[in-house]
Image (cartoon, rainbow, N blue to C red; front, side, top):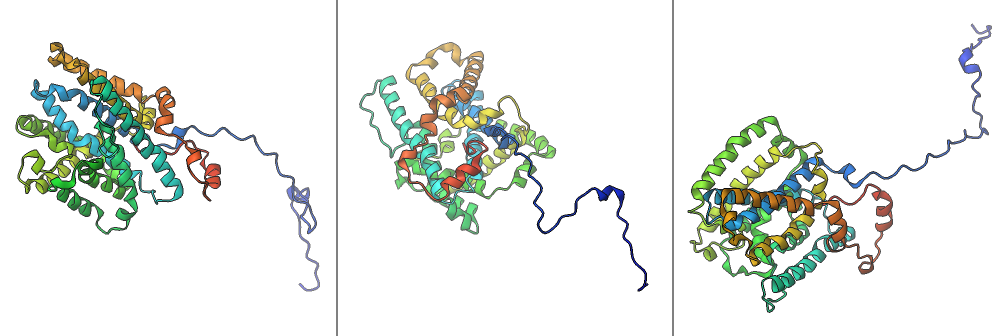
Length: 392
C-alpha cells in the first residue's frame, strides 16, 4: 500500500465545476426581484374574531332597537334580556384577548391615546351636542367625566388597558376581578364619574380575555360545543321569557349598585356571580356558532368601533323624534322591520367607505402631539402588513 499511487477518479459530472480557491471571487448575486406589494390589512387577521366582532355589534344594534318594544311584547323583552346577557361580555372578552400585548410602552400608549382617548373626547362632545339639538335641550352640559350613552365603553377600555400589566402578574386575576365587581355592586357611593360602576362590574370579562389562550377558543368551536349550545341557548330564551316581567333589566347594564336598583345589598354579589356565569355560558354558545372561515361580512369586523359609535346617533334620534310612536312598529311585522333596519344600518356603518370618512375621529395619527421614540423607526420598517389589528 505504501508504494502504490492512489488515484482519485472525479466523476465526469463534476469535472466542469471550478474548484473554489482562497482568492476566488464569490459568485455574482442574482439581481433582486422587484418588491412585492404589501399584503392587505386583512391578510394577517383571524377571520373568526372579525366575524365574532361583526356579529356582536349587530346584536348590540338590535338590542337598542328592541328596547322601546319591551313593554308591548314579552317576546321582544325575552330577546332583549338574552342578548344583553352576552353581547357586550363577548365584545369585552375579545377586547381583553387582544390587549395581552399592552405593556405601557411608548408605542402602546400612543395607540391608546389616538385609538381610544381621542375618540372618547370627540364622541362625548358630539353626542352631547346632538342631544342638545335633537332633544331640544340646549342646557344639557358637556362632561368628559360622565360618559353619555355609548361612550362608556371607550372610557372603560382605556382604564382596563392601563391595568393590564397588573392583571398579568396576579396569580388569580379572574377571581380578584370578580371580587372587585362584587364589591362595586354594593357600593352606591362610587358615583357616575367615568361610569366606574360599569368599568368595575364588566371588568371580569376583560380580565378573562387576558387569560384566554387560542386553545380555549378551539374548544368552544368544536362540533360537540356547537351541538350543546342549542339546548343551552334555548333554555336561556325560555328562562328569559319567564323572567321578563319579573326581572329588572337594569341588572344587565351593570351601571348601578344593588341599592340603587331598590334591592337589598346582599343581592349584589349574588347577582354578580350569577350573571357572570350566565353570561359566560352564552358567550361560549355565541363563539361556538361564529364561523371561522372568511365570509362576506368578515372584513367588516375591522370597523366595528365605527358601527358601534355611529349607530348611537340613529338609535337615540329614533327616541328623540318619536319614531316608535307609530302603532305598526309595535306589531310583529313592525318589530321584524325594526330589527332588519338596525342590522342593515350598523352593517353599512362598518364598511370601508365609512371608515375612511370618519378615520380622522376614530384613528387619528396625531404625529404632531408625540415625541419620537427609539422604536418608532424600526417599527415602521417592520410593519409592512397593514394597520394594527383592531380590538373592538
